[in-house]
Image (tube, rainbow, N blue to C red; front, side):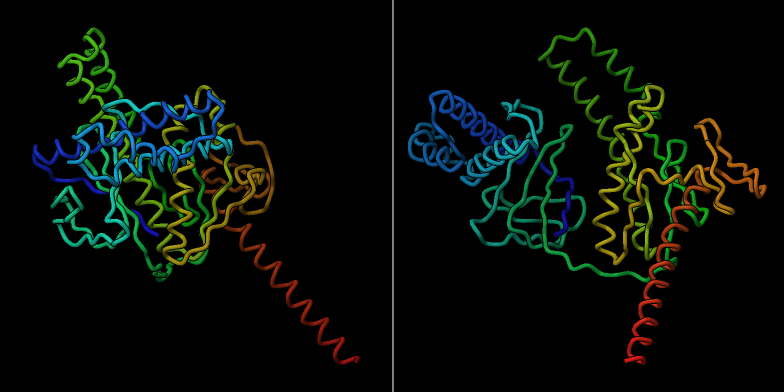
Length: 377
């Protein structure tokens, strides 16, 4: 499965209709959560299916305005509520909270089991009608989710995708992630981090400062909040763009990509570097690289976090301590002087190559032993 998310081009009437559907889904979710909490206090064991039946037979007829909106919205609202409680009981998430207007507004619709065809720039959705996108989409999906972020509406969906392996320029590449530079490859290529937050930090601080004395809920407060949200969205989009370009380049052009299993939680314990580390999005890098390697026929190798890639000389194998303030690796044994990030990426590459040679040697040894046994037999 492959997912796509794109911005919608809407008029005021369409924006109002989408806001009504998002409010419908939020109302049903909060109603279901309230009833769930009360039923649990009374000793019952509720679930999403029972809540949907009670809502359909008893509550929905009391609100005529719900007939003008898609009935699939409230059904997915109860499904999401049941999934939220399932994750809570499994220890994967916190207890579900009531949704608030203007925060994470979204809803999901489908065609009752029939596929939804998205072709070109204009797309026909059930009940919503024809909507336009800023970029063409070619997909066949079972459901679509429409959400609002910083005043704009987005469409997202998943569809079947056939992986297509691409020709590789390099067989094995080591990738060392860092704070100074986002990634350093064993081939010598360096990818600088976006550092979008640092670029817009002063502007963001200024907007928040101007918003300090505004009355919460007023028109001016809403305008200021929208400006802040738009700037946050821009910062996040720049960071995501840099990560997508890097991971796509690695998966398309390399047969095997070697990275380290970083202890990000432990790295964030460093108060001086926690802010810079969190802005590099190491987890998101690994997540994107994982599924893109499957798309483009690439192998992802994650080395053990205790492997001393930065402390080991890539030429002779000498190991020495390397504090973070030392950016150049100077080997006292062979006299090698090399950037520490480049040295680490080369060590990651060599570790995989050495392991492959070792496995080949073992295979040849087993074959030789088999030939001897057969000859003696």
